[in-house]
Amino acid sequence: MFRFVATLSVAALLMACQPESKLDTAWNECEAGSEKKITAVYDYADFGPPSMSGEMLGPEYWTWQNQGGGDPSKEFDVKVVVHADNAKKLAMTHYVVDPVKEADYRYVSFMEATSFLDFNILELKELASVDGETSFPKLTAALTNLKARIQKEVCP
Amino acid sequence: MTTFSEHAVKELLAQYGSHADRVGSQRFDVNPAKFRAAGLKRTDCITYVIECLEAGFEGVGDASAKSKVRQLGQYGTKLASYLVNTKKWVGVHINPDEYHPDDGNDEHPYTSYLVRKKCKYYNIPMKYKVTNYRPTPKTDPDFQQVNPAKAEQTLDSVSYAALKLVKFGFGLSKGGLHTWLFSEGKVYEVHWDELPTSGNLYEATALNKFMWNSGAIIVPKDQVSKLATLSGLPCSGS
Image (cartoon, rainbow over all chains, first blue to last red; front, top):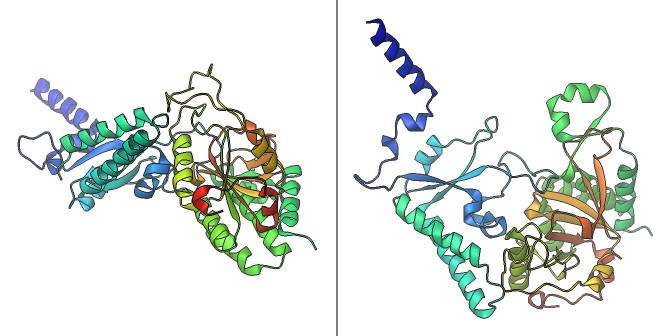
């Protein structure tokens, strides 16, 4: 009996230490038997430089600040939640912006994200065809890879 | 008659030279009561910009612009757009190496690409560019990280020398992540995490040594004639 209670207590303790999202993932299911989810989380930098993505995502520094400070090497761990097209409220409920925890999320629908990526990949490819020396090959490959990941991981 | 820029530079140098009554905003916000009791005022990069612009507009009797600067100054890009679109200041894109950033960051060559194509830096209209004033050498580990096929750039000291004639400007890096002031070749900035005694709360750096790489300098109307020797960007219509 003691062993049973002790095992339960350890299990409860372990459960309490888990992030909430790992305890209940049912909310994020959108297709039975599919790898696709209602939301998936990416890094801000995955969407290219801020001068490319800023209009869609907002600035690269914390949402709750109006500047980022004077250190050019400072990085901000801003995340982008790509969500199914009708699931913004759900995404905002599960990924909450919290200055105290330095949790900063930007929310983008599947359609917005893939349209943004299509537009910028095409633009970079056109640039490369006009001026092969200024071609941003790594950036083009990274954006193409991100589009494939989103299509694989997020429900439209 | 004293110009806007003369008023603004007076404030810029006054604060840079004497700031024992200031403290960086991140330090201040930890214990406002303590710093207030010590007679210290909160400052940071955008506050320095706002106060110098306010001094300039007050000096030339433009109360409306002074009030607008305070109102818009929360975000550097909005303030810059107002100065260009409404007050007819002029935007200059800066980039020490247009193709080979020495930090390997796509941001810098991409801003130059957008400026060449659209004459905009984060939607702020640009009329001129001053670039390649610190070309990244072939020996740098980040050389050709972004544009592998592009050759080493040639130093453009002519455009840089022209920009150094500008007495006052408002600068932005990484779309307003950092804001600063420019005067005769130097960047003047405030670091928000410093104490007045640290010796680093206010800093002046030659633009070609400034580590933020690409950005923009917004030049007041009374200084625009100093840019006359620069070639205008084709898309700006000049």
